[in-house]
Image (cartoon, rainbow, N blue to C red):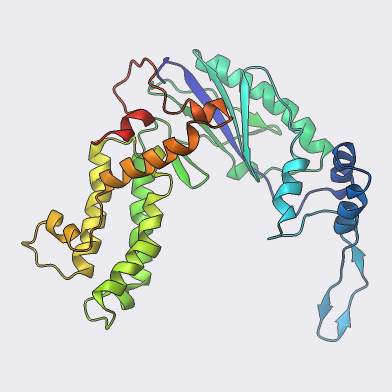
Length: 323
């Protein structure tokens, strides 16, 4: 956006990702990189699995499991990452993966060129999926173009079906809107907080026998992490949106501490020593900067560099200073 470019992106929804890992193809890939001693161990871990169905007194015959990695296991995500490590790459596109969450991006000054480049990548992606027996749930995939301009981007197709275009998408717990102003993310987090608070009404209501200290603990442990997740990223939102989150926190603290209407929000926070949202943004950003300053990945280490800019919106480095 700083360079006036379009970033068009496709967020893939892989159908039953961990359950559909094809053992035969995975073992072919593992054979290339594993030692002769380790390969038989992993092979036995994957292939020596069977299942049967039992209904009352009737039991089916045993069948061999030929796909899938064990759920909630330590090796599961690692094996899946190895299985998808050879995802196709195309010039002028970027692929980002975290477990089964996959995003493909194309950045160009012309939206039609960006979309065309992304479409070329998807053609190679279809071949890869066919060869690896991976299925995509197209109705749950999302196509979004990040830009401040109003120009309508061309549509893209996957397996001859149009991918739905959207103005916002959820990726790794963050709601990304097309203008990256984080308004949608803050709205969704406030909604999530209110739903969680209502589910704990019997604990946090005024007539609850729970002490104010324990109610405050519930807020810190259950409700607060909902909005602090990714704070060093969405903290770049406009002050007007930050104030909405601050207002939500103030309402909860006022209710928990049963403070009268005439008591100022600043005074309510002083007693339990609860930081403001803006103070939390600075704290999280400084901690994140300390972790990433010497990171081996240049995309992470350059996150807090003060590059020339043409837009007034905040950069990560701006969050290191007080608001």
